[in-house]
Every structure is written in structure tokens, then in C-alpha cells.
Image (tube, rainbow, N blue to C red):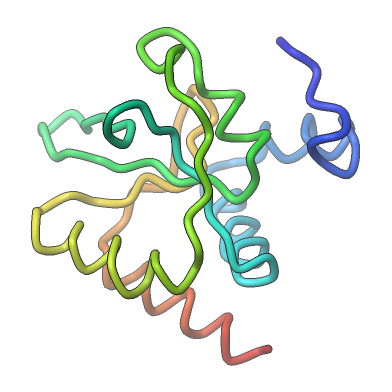
Length: 132
């Protein structure tokens, strides 16, 4: 794996967080995204999309550039990391996902991710925003 030192606080943090269970990575995602007011996706003439075993389309989001970059391999090798402002995520991206029938895939680590309903993600972000 490529070293991500300098993109995060340190490589130790990256290694520790990337291995956490999906539900714990989700909690980390909520806190970091609200704290930094930014989410990350992979983009190449359109956002990186995947699907679950039922064929539901999933749009992956990450809390930091390094984690998105970690997943820019194989079919996403030509994708670049793009940031999305938290307000834009909540006011434009998530309502569009809901309208189009996509689900957010939170903090994929090349093994699994937290897949949830758009409304749940909005609620959790709004709840965390109340702490600021």
C-alpha cells in the first residue's frame, strides 16, 4: 500500500482507522466531516459509483482525502479525489441521491462500508452539527 504520511496527521492514524469495523468508521466519518465541513469522493467524468448485492447503486463518501485515495485502485484507478462542501452535500448531493434511489456508502476501505438510507445520514449529520 502507498504511504499516506502528510495527508493525515500521521500514518499510524490512517492504519488504525482504516481497519476499524464499518460502524465505527461511520462514527469517525460523521465527526470528521462535521468538524472539517468537507467530504471526499472519487471523480472522473462523474462520481465513482458501486452497487450492493441487490443492485442498489451506492455513492461512496470518505472523511479525508487519504481514505478516498486509498480506494482509487482497480476500476477507480483513473479517478481523482474531489472534495465536497458539507452544505453542498446536505443541500444538493443527498437530496439528489434520495430522488435517484441511490444510497450513500460511507467510508469504504476496499473491503466494506456503512451503507444506509439517505435520511439516516442527514439526521446523523444534523445531530452532530448541533454540537458545534
